[in-house]
Length: 376
Image (tube, rainbow, N blue to C red; front, side, top):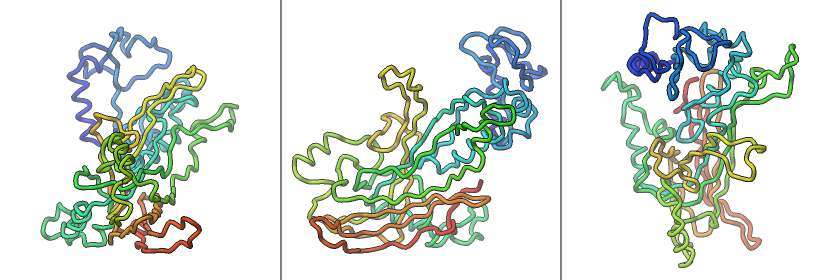
């Protein structure tokens, strides 16, 4: 954990909960927090005490996971292949899957060489999804951000954000007064850890080398046609409602009447993640996987840890009956930042051999990360 405050918080748990210390009372003068012996019995802790079943000997390390070589214990693990990690469990997923730098962080710790070649990552993969949304409320709330200060710590002395910054920034939203007009579609997928068939000087496959020179930039160009419109997705947050979808199909309608134009105010981003999936040889014909998702089509009912990511459009787009919404989105980066760029257009469907007609086009949002970015 690299956040100093979080490190103190975790250490307070360790000091007060025997289950974090193999079931024994915490001894601050012991060397347990800085000791790692690959030859020690798995049922014993650093002081030779038996670890009580149902407990763990938790070691809290305060450093950036991408700089594992800077910590003595992690450096020891790197230098001793048998001591390297067999499993990495991370909580780095954002509303759009990768928007909180999960790819960069997990690639970074693998590049340090702290993982075994057969190391398992939880999550194993995550896919970003996106869909058009119609919501005058969301659009209005995004515009209202223009009058807020850029730096809240400066108070009234801080300049306002401005309309450009406000409408080129994605927002985590709990959608209510909104309608996701089309079924969501996948943008891209990240998987961890990276595996390599190339051997190092010792003749072993190197986990660290497999993560070298990884490019996490992505792009997706998606088309949402009239056939993708479905009332079952509702407001864009929650499980797909098959009853509503069936009723709409029976009545011959979709999200709104096919004879009625709709207005697109932006896009909703979501994710689907495979936490763990058994190897094929262990499945034995059964689905042995664990997933979490906020994408409506595969929504994890009862989970409230993430809400959709709203990508606003500066100017709403009118979608005539039967028209197609095209969305282009990029994940870009430089030496110190990661950001998204997006744009959209509306065109006629081109059905029945008719020539496609371009109805409207949005501007490019957030080019070069000028309004929004996340620092590495």
